[in-house]
Length: 252
Image 1 (cartoon, rainbow, N blue to C red):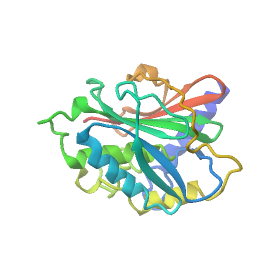
Image 2: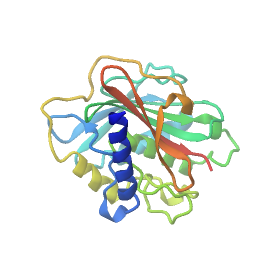
Image 3: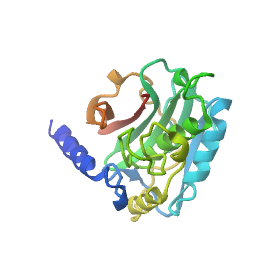
């Protein structure tokens, strides 16, 4: 209970910080990949269909413009429907996960303050041909945002109706100008990764499966809601002191 209380206190602090993008302060707590030098490289495992390939590669290119981290896209052997996490890497998947209300989900596994693995799920159930979300702009925004969460970034704004901030880390009803990171995102990454660690959690070789369920009941305790009252961040305690955080971008 004390652990959850501390988490809720941290979440309350983030609610205060996130709406002010001018401060470039939209990390979620102190969570980061452990590494011994900068820039470090995060492997993005490609478990997406051809309709998402361009967005995945664009997001990789965009986030690699950071001065503290690079990304590379590598082949994946994971079943996209399950999208099991791989230690030291970020597994990116697309599949028809069902009409559950969400466009994309990022899950980040934490031990202490360190990110140990991540997954991104892109929900084809809302991106079928002819749907309002089946555009390059929407695919780019969702892919960019969910991958950004796996580095330790939070949203800059969670109100769909506010003016666009020019970043994929912003909720919007019009993704045309919110498809890529902006300077605030890159500045925040510098802040997050300003110190080095004595160990590394990046690109470990061992594959370890994490929770594969796609519904909110499996995500644990809701920690924060958007301006429209829908929960956007969840936490679930796992074994051996590990936790998994889930970020959600909802359909309108």
